[in-house]
Image 1 (cartoon, rainbow, N blue to C red):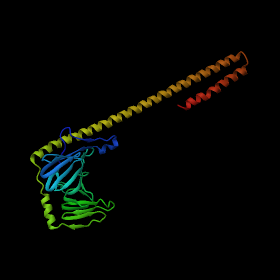
Image 2 (tube, rainbow, N blue to C red; image 1 turned 60 degrees about the vertical axis):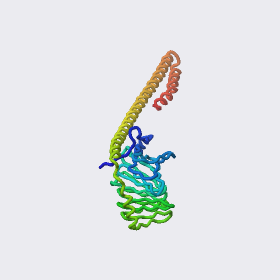
Image 3 (cartoon, rainbow, N blue to C red; image 1 turned 45 degrees about the horizontal axis):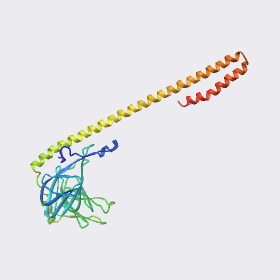
Image 4 (cartoon, rainbow, N blue to C red; image 1 turned 180 degrees about the vertical axis):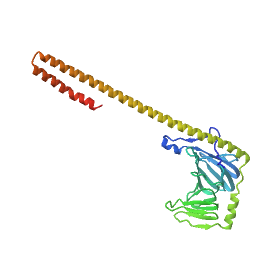
Length: 322
């Protein structure tokens, strides 16, 4: 089934518009997650303002999810994928967008401290991305279930299902390590990563965390309607972009034609001016020759020749600049 996109209702779509056609691939529509279940003290933080999280609250790009106390937790859906933020954890929603050009989704979450369980229920479509980062760790996923923990400057990725590509952010030149089902890896500053098998206790904990509640019916219906809205918003933006490009091409074509017409007229004006001056010079020379017939023929001929020679460079210069 095609992924469900959780986004704002009418009027809340946010477009990141690029200034020129080469940036159109970066144009995107912001999506939204939605709170499905909450226990204890969990807050959504936006622009420094904290609001206690409630079921059906929207979770937007730029927000922080803050759970206070060991017994607090919140479950949030991003389309069909879900996360569970456990107690004493702070997570920032870095990116939550759909790109207009190719309909690819980008989801990026950042754990400042604490732990978060991610449940990617379906394999991501080609070009989609879902990654979870922390100060020490980057976990890139396709379809999987995993827990990322960040405590005291040390990261840990434990995989319940599927596989996760893990990088040590403190050693950017090192290759990523693929961690598979029932494996985990510690991520420490300046150290290499070594996989190990999950303990039975860790497996039981992961099983409990993976039991994320099904999306409530009213939330599912709301998301279905929102999916149609974002689909229309993306299509409308694509059409607007197409028309803008066509108008630009048409305008460019007209400007080229106008320039050609202007150049043609200028050349014609130069030719007409040059011909008029040449005709005048010829007429003046003939007149001098006629006058010379009644007097000194040689002197008259020399004068006419001198006049023609004086006009020749001017005529050639104008013709040369056409």
